Length: 431
Ligand SMILES: C[S@@+](CC[C@H](N)C(=O)[O-])C[C@H]1O[C@@H](n2cnc3c(N)ncnc32)[C@H](O)[C@@H]1O
Image (cartoon, rainbow, N blue to C red):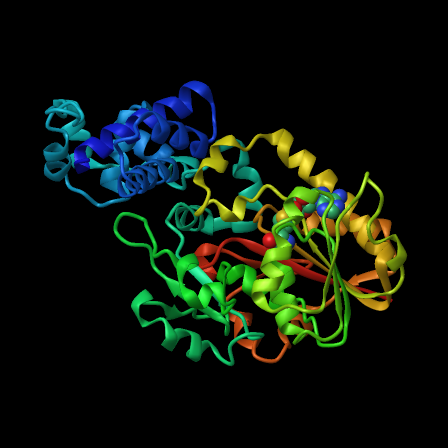
């Protein structure tokens, strides 16, 4: 397919997403099935155009004075891809499979690409109802932070120290990937996406198949490190899902001690088995829930560290999942808050005296972070937040003190400040 034909296809997919209010991944899959002539490179390029358009949906619509899919794609080519009006006009030739030629109004608007006077939710590309929540955390940084959350995320890898002795060794074994060391996580390697938004097929690399590497955002690596998990501890990963944090903690514990990994959704937990094997993890017991029975009831009062990687709105991952921001509704925030209270209350019973809960979200909304914890400590008097100094006092993590935002209960990572997904972490110790 020509670049112009791919743009026409992206416009078609966005129209389908709008008309049928469906997830972008479903619309892209259907498009691929009904256009079998399109090869894998075409489909990846179209997906990248669609996701870039979703990243900049509000600002692209604003500069074009129109929120229709064509206008959003044209505006995105200008704002996100940096094409000038002549380059966009050359793509919109009106020839076979290419979009219709630009109108005089479109040319003029693309030429100006004027975002001055745009309100924060337009300049920062997020739903307007969420502004007061974001404002509470971000204040004057609201627009730059949200603009950073509207960019493409890099592909981050965590080097698995159970399989490879150092980050350098993994880096040197894969020179063709063009990876660089992540600036904050001592275990991270970073690959920037190509022009078309695609990255290399890391999962096919022999080193990946041997378990040397895991795909994990640098922010996720850092919050795992901030848990302070140590060899010999008894740990419960209460919301283990596919096991991203479980694997990171197992490596920190050097396979010594015990991690019990569970989740209330057995389907989400299923991939963990294969991942544990590949990563050479030997200290994890997977507790799959059966018939709604509590899978860790025998562990109450015995645990040093309960990891609560809580269900959340995922606002912090909008760089990777821009579709989600336009689908988020106030009701889902309320639902997530109730789930957070439920998992925190369950965690409290597991912790032994002197033990701790490590609370993590991939959200930047205080309602899911500090607010969830202040209600929790009201309900559970014996728990107190660990100070920022203690949290950052872990060997090798002191440099984070200038990179992260301090909140009343913990630390907030954000794309502009830490160059990571938005993550929150706090540790609550039981007296
Ligand atoms: C953020 S995801 C976990 C991601 C995972 N820890 C990782 O690093 O790959 C949150 C998980 O919480 C689980 N969850 C939601 N409510 C729960 C509950 N009451 N008890 C246990 N798990 C729950 C969800 O099924 C989901 O897998």
